[in-house]
Structures are given as C-alpha cells and as structure tokens.
Length: 495
Image (cartoon, rainbow, N blue to C red; front, top):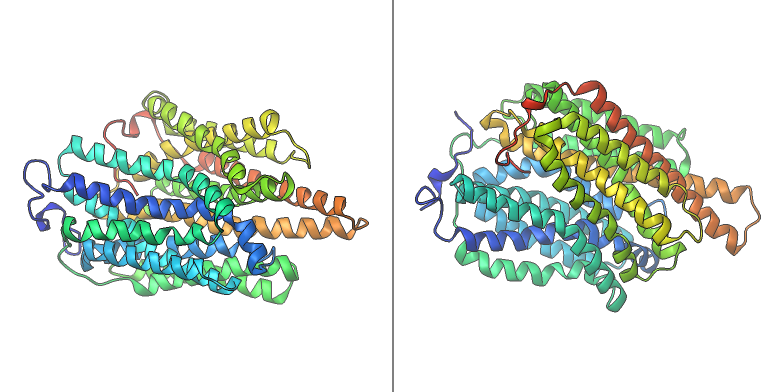
C-alpha cells in the first residue's frame, strides 16, 4: 500500500539465501551502536551526583539531565523511524551516530547546567534517529525466520545487558577519571562503529509517499516539555503558583492538539487505531505508568548510595546491579510461563512484585544494611520488571497490521521514555518538597540535613510505588486477553 515501507526488495542481496551476505558483520556494527545508546540511559545516573556538584545544578533542576534526553528521544522516536525508512536507513544510522557522538562531546565539555541539559536533549534527538534505523536495518538484512530470531536475540541481549554495563562503566569512569568521561566515552565508540559501518552497512530505503508528520512530532514534544517544566516549577514555586499551572495546562492542551493532528493527518506519527485496541492501549498505558514509577526511583537510589551511604561511584554501580539480576531471572521465567498462564496474570504479578520492592525502599534510613535490606529489595523490584515487560511487549505488539508494525513498536519504546520523563520530574518535585518541609520544622544541623535527604528519598519511592500500583490497576481493568491470544513462537516486531 502507498507509504508502507518495503523490506528486502531495496537491499542488494537481501532476498537470497537468508539475507545480505555481510549481515552478521553488520549485526556486530549495529550492536556496538545500540550499546552506545543503551549505556547512556544508566551511565549518566552514576555520574549525576558529581556532575551536579561540579556544575552547581540545583536539586530541582538536576532531573533535566535525565529528562532532557528521554523527552526528545521518546517524543521524536516515531518521526525518526519514518525518516530512516524514506531518507535511507544507512544514512540515518550514520547521521544519528555522528550526531550522538558530537552531542556527547558538548555534554562532556559542558561548563554549566544549561549546556549539559542542551547536550542531553541533542543526544535524544540523534538517538531517536539512530535506534529505529538500527532496528530497520536488522529487519531488512535478516529475512530467514531462524536467523532473524538470532539477530533479534543479540539485539535484545545488548538492550538488556547494556544497562548493567552502563552502571559499572559509569562507576569506573567517574571514580578513576571524571564524570565527564561518562559522556566523552561515546566518541571513541561511535568512531569505531562509523569506520566499520561505512564499508559494511548497505543502504536501503522504503518507496512511496514520503510525507512526514512534522507538526505532530513538534507538538507532542513541546507538550511533554511543558508538562515536565511545570512539574519542575512546582518544586520551586508550589503547585498553586500561576507559572506552574500555566505550563501544566499548556502541556495538556498541546497533547490534546497532538491527538487532533493525528486524527486528521493522512500520515500520522501515531495512528489512533493502534491505541483504540483495548488490550494494546491498556498495555501502552501500563508501560507509561510503570516507566514513570521506575526511572525516578533509580535516580534517587543512586543518590542514596553516594550521598547518604557514602559509596564511591564504582560501589554505587555495583550496588545497583541486583535490579538487573532480578530482571534477567524473571524475564527468563516469564518467557516460559507466558504460553501457560497468559499475559495478564504475569503483568499483575509483576506489578505486585515491583511495588513490594519499592515499598521496601521506602523504609531506608541513614544506615540501612545493603545485604539485609537493599539487596533483596532490588532483586524483588527487578523481578517485578521482568514479569511485567515480557508479557507487556508481546501484548502491545501482537496482532498489529504489517503497515502499523513500526509505529506500534516505536510507540512501546516511546511510552517507557515519556513515562520515565514525566515520572522523574514528578518524583523529583515530591522529593524537593519533602526535604524542604522536613527542614522547615527542625533545627538545622548536619544530622538533620542527612535525615531530610533520606525522608525525601522515602517520599519519592512512595510515589513510585503508587505509580506502579496504578499500572497494575490499569492492567486489571483495561486488559481483556485470553491465554491463547498472545504469541509464543518467534519474537514479534521489537522496538
């Protein structure tokens, strides 16, 4: 149909003997680039306490180091996928990689918070071009079912394990060099991938109508930025301040305008028919809420380790790994259980486990034991994530018509990024307000200051718990799916 991306027909050699003759070498290049993007989601978390102190960033504004990236990445992901299809997937891949490296250089050399925030936003822009181009290249280069499953397994392993690598690498670089190298490290990674990509990666593009929904992309991104800025203003001026209410109202109005634009557009970024399916819409909403509860929680856990418990950056990175271990354990179990019990029971169990892990984190104190308290809390939290996202991904992408597959896949990724952006801003505001309120009623001294921070972290974890429970309620009320409705064979479209 017009405007639908073609697949193997536009890649020389892709249709013969399972795919392009250099496809496995290309997979290695794509894996390196994907690792760079995934690393950046966690490596900066470990570096953030040092970056905040070095650049004089306020507690209210520090969340922009995270949200500037996730907002532009999530808001432009759908447009980036369409640009890659019609502009050329190799071209989009190369431009995305070079742009990501240059933005990383600006961030690594930043002399103030505003420059760092801007660099992180640019990383998100180029990441939104690089990530869908990488997936599209895999799709067109691997045409044989078994080989494609292996390729996506490698891609998925990078996506899953990259966060753990980011925690460790962020700790090593921050402790033994500088927080700046957590961004500058992308330059040699990108240079290595670029040298390999130029001769190895073939060009491919879709044919047909190449119109883009640029107004939709701009409006949804501006709406999300306005919401996050409104949450940030609330931390400084209060929820009833005119500026706070104005930005939040503007954000809501812009998001409503985005829906109108998508309904009227002949080439929408997000076809509303994708969301109107009850199971899929419920999965997207649950993904947004659980992302909102978790991104901010991970940020505060990093600060708790380094500021309160006085862990070094490397120790903080190691101390954060139990979440990843829990995810890996539960994801493997969920893959086996999905065909037997179905998606909904696993998602509900995952929400309960994740909320239980978060509740345990609300009980942290100035001297909480890692082995007795923090370790099991993180493992349970990670297991909740694993049991949630495996069935959620299958449910969100199952039964999508071929011409909507790319949009549905990108939307799943975008919901997690957008949810994380909004959640980080909201939880940071609640944290700041809690600390201010605690200090206002007590005599200021060093011990009171530390207890105020711990109180703020506990409040942020409590709000994260509420968002996760809300995602479970969404699953309970909106999703109506039978066990046999969820695929159990080869992976569907991955985002």
